[in-house]
Image (cartoon, rainbow, N blue to C red; front, side, top):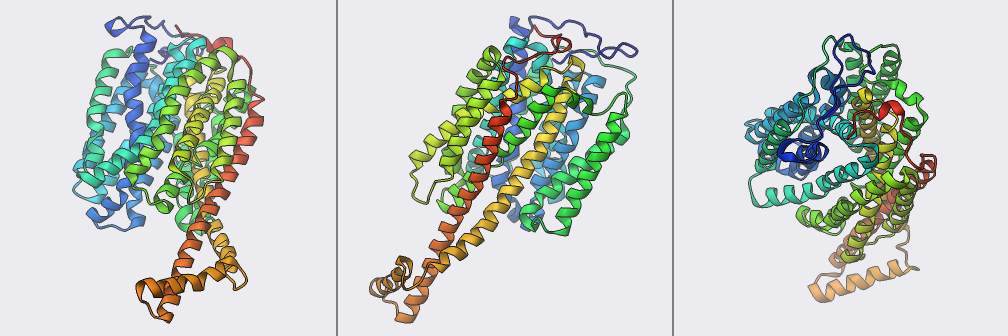
Length: 536
């Protein structure tokens, strides 16, 4: 578990009582913690994507339009983003074990509420509760692993922990699509129950109880400003796809969110016990590792929503088949993550990250060249390579950042890291979604200009009309209209493929930038002496 917190009146940097070396069933405590936390972490990440494929069914069942049913996703994301900054206070005040087990129990119970929802508003409330509970889990999980694993094994531990971060998005659409296609939509939420119950039981039995820190002052104004800042910014970015960057609502929400974040930062710098300690950015290694992480988030996750759209909208795959197509990437990460983590322990984050970003840049450039006829076998190999790159880039920056953080600030630092990554991930998705939409229109116009009498496309039009007259028995006028409609459909598909290529090229440049920024990371991870306490 995370380091027990000092009692009221003790020095902030005082060391907590030593954690046990062995735990339940005689396993080494550090491995027991990893085993206990993985199911809870996995069910949270799986739930992020498993519901996405059920939106159309939910809209039909509850008779709500597309914009309204999106609140099933939006409410979850906003609550998660608003809860993350509070994880450090909750852990110190009530102990990691109590908060972790309680959050998992609430997450599991709210999953049941969503599955039993008699009305749409009940479903949204259940999703908001799910998001709030889940938002506290990730920062505490990362902090806990840093506490129980010694510096020379943290990379390996984080490598294992990276597996559900990719397995969730890969398996979610597959499981969700299969459930929605073949069974009742309520099972999308009920599937969380057995995993959640098992995770609660493991956490209760395995984790060290810790010791609460009494007398802590809750930073109420900081909580309000962080909720407004992260909530409004994330909500504004989530509206970009529907309203566009120029919409008053989008600009207003993002502007108010960023203003709130600036006020939050200034407020936190003046607090003795801040909700999020922004002074951590005064540590160069923490700062540069976070900057690399922010850029890489756009390169990594901003592009992850592109391929499912390509496979389903342009290649005609179902949600289930799309999930199966994405599975090799998850399996590749499962292999590469622990190996890369072990390499970070031995040679440092710089070289592993640079290799990963170089591989990612090459892979992303190849992804930008896919067409309507690219074979699925080729795509699977590209995804395997992408999984290797993900395994080498997801955790090293976080390891570098956390290595210089004192034990009592680890959850705080992890909350800062994850809250900002959420913002940059949402920004990446919004940016690339806009690029795809805008570029599709531009390419459609450009391709349409090429349909002239002196071009191959223009010459193909009367040939297609003649074929329709011969094969389908259409009249000349009707065949001409049908041929034009077919040509416009082909142009639209080709324009969309070119637009996806444009979006992937943007993430290619982000990967290149991340590669050069990664050269500034430490070779062998430099650990602050005050940050080494607590590991076994």
